[in-house]
Length: 165
Image 1: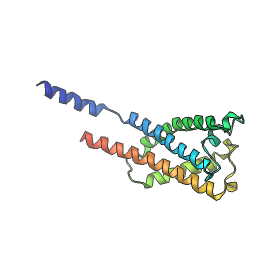
Image 2 (image 1 turned 135 degrees about the horizontal axis):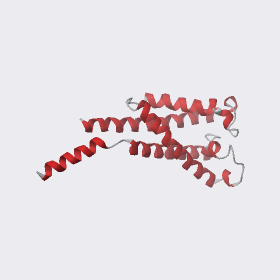
Image 3 (image 1 turned 180 degrees about the vertical axis):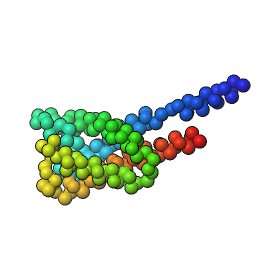
Image 4 (image 1 turned 120 degrees about the horizontal axis):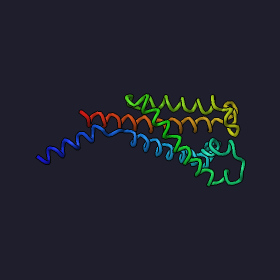
């Protein structure tokens, strides 16, 4: 009798659990992983734009913001902002699985940052002044980031739905 009650309590707990903590961790670690990848690609001169180019160097022109400390702080800020993108993806597109939604969202995010929000980031050159390596590398990074977020969230969502049934 006690075990049946315990099983029912565990089932009720599973039904009440939310995916939000998992979405938050996916967003944070996705931002962390792919902004570190962006910093590495900048270090090896695949791109002239790194995380610190967006977060710090557009507004701060101090010596420390151009060094490793500025890069680390920028990576952490991007990781926190990525939580919002993951939550937005969860709200709007969690039911879509596969790679294609991630590719499309990655291109949209890249377009928003490099084309629409370009006036906000004075440190980032205009789109037509970027070199080919920077364009290709940043598009690929944004696509990889978005595919990571979308695939992870849709997988967690489908797993959560399967547990409920």
